[in-house]
Length: 254
Image (tube, rainbow, N blue to C red; front, top):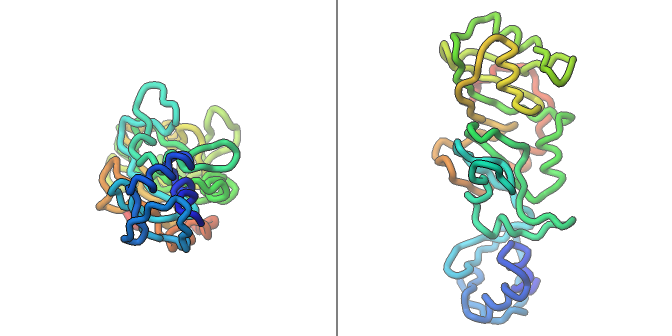
Protein backbone atom coordinates (compact mmCIF):
# COMPACT_ATOMS: atom_id res chain seq x y z
CA UNK A 1 0.00 0.00 0.00
CA UNK A 2 1.30 3.47 -0.81
CA UNK A 3 2.08 5.53 2.28
CA UNK A 4 -0.37 8.28 1.36
CA UNK A 5 -3.11 5.63 1.06
CA UNK A 6 -2.18 4.21 4.46
CA UNK A 7 -2.49 7.63 6.10
CA UNK A 8 -5.75 8.30 4.29
CA UNK A 9 -7.21 4.97 5.46
CA UNK A 10 -6.32 5.85 9.06
CA UNK A 11 -8.11 9.19 9.04
CA UNK A 12 -5.25 11.67 8.65
CA UNK A 13 -7.02 13.73 5.99
CA UNK A 14 -7.65 13.68 2.26
CA UNK A 15 -5.14 11.99 -0.02
CA UNK A 16 -3.78 15.41 -0.94
CA UNK A 17 -3.33 16.37 2.72
CA UNK A 18 -1.69 13.02 3.49
CA UNK A 19 0.70 13.40 0.57
CA UNK A 20 1.62 16.87 1.79
CA UNK A 21 2.34 15.63 5.31
CA UNK A 22 4.69 13.00 3.91
CA UNK A 23 6.48 15.31 1.46
CA UNK A 24 7.03 17.89 4.20
CA UNK A 25 8.83 15.32 6.34
CA UNK A 26 6.15 14.89 9.01
CA UNK A 27 5.84 11.10 8.76
CA UNK A 28 7.96 8.17 9.93
CA UNK A 29 7.23 4.48 9.39
CA UNK A 30 8.55 1.97 11.88
CA UNK A 31 11.00 4.63 13.06
CA UNK A 32 12.19 5.58 9.56
CA UNK A 33 11.55 9.07 8.08
CA UNK A 34 9.81 8.86 4.69
CA UNK A 35 9.17 11.82 2.36
CA UNK A 36 7.88 9.90 -0.67
CA UNK A 37 4.07 9.80 -0.76
CA UNK A 38 4.18 6.81 -3.11
CA UNK A 39 6.46 4.79 -0.85
CA UNK A 40 5.20 1.20 -0.75
CA UNK A 41 4.50 -0.01 2.78
CA UNK A 42 4.19 -3.67 3.78
CA UNK A 43 1.00 -3.17 5.76
CA UNK A 44 0.52 -5.25 8.89
CA UNK A 45 -1.90 -4.86 11.79
CA UNK A 46 -0.25 -2.71 14.43
CA UNK A 47 2.42 -1.29 12.11
CA UNK A 48 3.86 1.71 14.02
CA UNK A 49 4.18 5.12 12.39
CA UNK A 50 4.14 8.75 13.44
CA UNK A 51 2.45 11.81 11.97
CA UNK A 52 3.77 15.19 13.10
CA UNK A 53 5.42 13.47 16.03
CA UNK A 54 2.25 11.67 17.16
CA UNK A 55 2.70 7.90 17.48
CA UNK A 56 0.01 5.77 15.84
CA UNK A 57 -0.50 2.20 14.68
CA UNK A 58 -2.20 0.82 11.59
CA UNK A 59 -5.57 -0.87 12.16
CA UNK A 60 -7.62 -2.20 9.24
CA UNK A 61 -10.72 -1.70 11.41
CA UNK A 62 -10.99 0.51 14.46
CA UNK A 63 -12.23 -0.99 17.74
CA UNK A 64 -11.89 1.26 20.77
CA UNK A 65 -13.28 1.68 24.26
CA UNK A 66 -13.99 5.00 25.93
CA UNK A 67 -14.68 5.77 29.58
CA UNK A 68 -17.63 8.08 29.06
CA UNK A 69 -17.77 10.89 31.61
CA UNK A 70 -20.96 12.52 32.84
CA UNK A 71 -22.12 15.61 31.00
CA UNK A 72 -21.47 14.30 27.49
CA UNK A 73 -23.78 13.17 24.70
CA UNK A 74 -23.33 10.10 22.48
CA UNK A 75 -24.15 12.11 19.38
CA UNK A 76 -22.23 13.58 16.46
CA UNK A 77 -24.54 16.59 16.69
CA UNK A 78 -25.20 17.14 20.41
CA UNK A 79 -28.06 19.37 21.46
CA UNK A 80 -26.92 20.56 24.88
CA UNK A 81 -23.82 18.78 26.18
CA UNK A 82 -20.42 18.22 24.53
CA UNK A 83 -20.16 15.20 22.24
CA UNK A 84 -18.21 12.13 23.38
CA UNK A 85 -16.59 12.20 19.95
CA UNK A 86 -14.65 15.32 20.92
CA UNK A 87 -12.77 13.10 23.40
CA UNK A 88 -11.29 11.09 20.52
CA UNK A 89 -8.36 12.08 18.28
CA UNK A 90 -9.22 13.56 14.89
CA UNK A 91 -7.90 10.48 13.08
CA UNK A 92 -10.57 8.25 14.64
CA UNK A 93 -13.27 10.79 13.86
CA UNK A 94 -12.17 11.16 10.22
CA UNK A 95 -11.55 7.54 9.21
CA UNK A 96 -13.16 6.97 5.78
CA UNK A 97 -16.00 4.47 5.91
CA UNK A 98 -18.09 3.10 3.05
CA UNK A 99 -21.55 4.55 2.54
CA UNK A 100 -20.59 8.17 3.11
CA UNK A 101 -20.19 7.72 6.86
CA UNK A 102 -17.00 9.05 8.40
CA UNK A 103 -15.26 7.97 11.59
CA UNK A 104 -16.02 5.51 14.35
CA UNK A 105 -19.56 5.16 15.66
CA UNK A 106 -20.72 4.34 19.18
CA UNK A 107 -22.35 1.02 20.04
CA UNK A 108 -25.68 2.33 21.25
CA UNK A 109 -25.96 5.40 23.45
CA UNK A 110 -25.59 6.33 27.09
CA UNK A 111 -27.55 9.24 28.57
CA UNK A 112 -25.61 12.45 29.18
CA UNK A 113 -25.55 11.77 32.95
CA UNK A 114 -24.59 8.09 32.59
CA UNK A 115 -20.92 7.15 32.87
CA UNK A 116 -18.88 4.10 31.99
CA UNK A 117 -17.90 1.77 29.18
CA UNK A 118 -18.66 2.85 25.62
CA UNK A 119 -17.49 0.90 22.57
CA UNK A 120 -16.84 2.58 19.22
CA UNK A 121 -15.92 1.13 15.84
CA UNK A 122 -16.03 1.64 12.08
CA UNK A 123 -16.92 -2.05 11.55
CA UNK A 124 -20.61 -2.17 10.66
CA UNK A 125 -21.00 -5.89 11.44
CA UNK A 126 -19.40 -5.43 14.85
CA UNK A 127 -21.63 -2.44 15.63
CA UNK A 128 -24.74 -4.41 14.69
CA UNK A 129 -23.76 -7.50 16.68
CA UNK A 130 -23.00 -5.50 19.82
CA UNK A 131 -26.19 -3.44 19.65
CA UNK A 132 -28.76 -5.93 18.33
CA UNK A 133 -31.05 -7.49 20.98
CA UNK A 134 -31.04 -10.68 18.88
CA UNK A 135 -27.48 -11.38 20.00
CA UNK A 136 -28.23 -10.91 23.72
CA UNK A 137 -24.89 -9.28 24.51
CA UNK A 138 -25.12 -8.75 28.29
CA UNK A 139 -24.41 -5.28 29.66
CA UNK A 140 -23.76 -4.72 33.36
CA UNK A 141 -24.91 -1.48 34.97
CA UNK A 142 -24.35 -0.25 38.49
CA UNK A 143 -27.01 2.16 39.72
CA UNK A 144 -27.25 4.31 42.81
CA UNK A 145 -30.94 4.33 43.74
CA UNK A 146 -32.99 6.69 45.91
CA UNK A 147 -34.70 4.16 48.17
CA UNK A 148 -33.33 1.13 49.98
CA UNK A 149 -33.47 -2.00 47.86
CA UNK A 150 -35.45 -5.02 48.97
CA UNK A 151 -35.92 -8.51 47.62
CA UNK A 152 -39.35 -7.66 46.20
CA UNK A 153 -37.84 -5.02 43.91
CA UNK A 154 -35.05 -7.35 42.80
CA UNK A 155 -37.56 -10.14 42.14
CA UNK A 156 -39.65 -7.83 39.96
CA UNK A 157 -36.63 -6.85 37.91
CA UNK A 158 -35.67 -10.49 37.38
CA UNK A 159 -39.23 -11.59 36.59
CA UNK A 160 -39.90 -8.68 34.24
CA UNK A 161 -41.56 -5.28 34.38
CA UNK A 162 -43.80 -3.64 31.79
CA UNK A 163 -42.58 -0.38 30.25
CA UNK A 164 -44.87 2.19 28.70
CA UNK A 165 -43.75 1.51 25.10
CA UNK A 166 -44.17 -2.28 25.09
CA UNK A 167 -46.83 -4.51 26.68
CA UNK A 168 -44.37 -7.37 26.94
CA UNK A 169 -42.47 -7.61 30.23
CA UNK A 170 -38.79 -6.71 30.10
CA UNK A 171 -36.63 -8.65 32.51
CA UNK A 172 -33.10 -8.35 33.79
CA UNK A 173 -30.70 -11.22 33.21
CA UNK A 174 -29.52 -10.64 36.77
CA UNK A 175 -30.24 -8.16 39.54
CA UNK A 176 -28.73 -7.90 43.00
CA UNK A 177 -28.10 -5.38 45.73
CA UNK A 178 -24.45 -4.43 46.20
CA UNK A 179 -25.41 -2.18 49.10
CA UNK A 180 -28.62 -0.78 50.53
CA UNK A 181 -28.89 1.80 47.73
CA UNK A 182 -26.59 0.26 45.10
CA UNK A 183 -27.92 -2.04 42.41
CA UNK A 184 -26.12 -4.27 39.91
CA UNK A 185 -28.32 -4.93 36.89
CA UNK A 186 -27.46 -7.01 33.82
CA UNK A 187 -29.51 -6.52 30.65
CA UNK A 188 -29.50 -8.35 27.34
CA UNK A 189 -31.04 -5.56 25.27
CA UNK A 190 -30.95 -1.78 25.16
CA UNK A 191 -34.19 0.17 25.11
CA UNK A 192 -34.43 3.94 25.55
CA UNK A 193 -33.67 4.85 29.20
CA UNK A 194 -34.19 1.16 29.98
CA UNK A 195 -32.42 0.92 33.33
CA UNK A 196 -34.08 4.05 34.69
CA UNK A 197 -37.53 2.96 33.51
CA UNK A 198 -37.15 -0.60 34.79
CA UNK A 199 -36.05 0.59 38.21
CA UNK A 200 -38.96 3.06 38.30
CA UNK A 201 -41.38 0.27 37.36
CA UNK A 202 -40.01 -1.79 40.23
CA UNK A 203 -40.76 1.02 42.69
CA UNK A 204 -37.46 2.88 42.98
CA UNK A 205 -35.52 5.66 41.27
CA UNK A 206 -32.06 5.82 39.67
CA UNK A 207 -29.94 8.67 41.04
CA UNK A 208 -26.70 7.79 39.22
CA UNK A 209 -25.86 5.19 36.58
CA UNK A 210 -22.61 3.59 35.40
CA UNK A 211 -22.01 0.87 32.78
CA UNK A 212 -19.27 -1.42 34.04
CA UNK A 213 -19.18 -4.22 31.47
CA UNK A 214 -20.26 -5.21 27.96
CA UNK A 215 -20.14 -8.93 27.23
CA UNK A 216 -16.76 -10.20 28.40
CA UNK A 217 -15.20 -6.73 28.53
CA UNK A 218 -15.02 -4.74 31.76
CA UNK A 219 -14.04 -1.11 32.06
CA UNK A 220 -10.39 -1.09 33.19
CA UNK A 221 -9.88 0.60 36.57
CA UNK A 222 -6.91 2.56 35.18
CA UNK A 223 -8.89 4.11 32.31
CA UNK A 224 -9.95 7.50 33.65
CA UNK A 225 -13.16 9.29 32.61
CA UNK A 226 -12.65 10.83 29.18
CA UNK A 227 -9.81 8.47 28.23
CA UNK A 228 -9.88 5.87 25.43
CA UNK A 229 -7.79 2.95 24.21
CA UNK A 230 -7.69 0.41 21.39
CA UNK A 231 -9.25 -3.00 22.01
CA UNK A 232 -6.88 -5.92 21.66
CA UNK A 233 -7.51 -8.61 19.04
CA UNK A 234 -8.40 -11.06 21.83
CA UNK A 235 -10.92 -8.62 23.29
CA UNK A 236 -12.61 -8.11 19.92
CA UNK A 237 -12.76 -11.86 19.31
CA UNK A 238 -14.22 -12.53 22.75
CA UNK A 239 -16.88 -9.84 22.27
CA UNK A 240 -17.99 -11.19 18.90
CA UNK A 241 -18.35 -14.70 20.33
CA UNK A 242 -20.68 -13.61 23.11
CA UNK A 243 -24.06 -15.36 23.09
CA UNK A 244 -27.01 -15.38 25.44
CA UNK A 245 -25.56 -16.02 28.90
CA UNK A 246 -26.80 -18.38 31.55
CA UNK A 247 -28.26 -16.61 34.61
CA UNK A 248 -25.46 -15.61 36.98
CA UNK A 249 -24.50 -13.04 39.56
CA UNK A 250 -24.61 -9.65 37.86
CA UNK A 251 -21.96 -8.38 40.24
CA UNK A 252 -19.33 -10.87 39.11
CA UNK A 253 -16.25 -9.01 38.02
CA UNK A 254 -17.18 -5.62 39.50
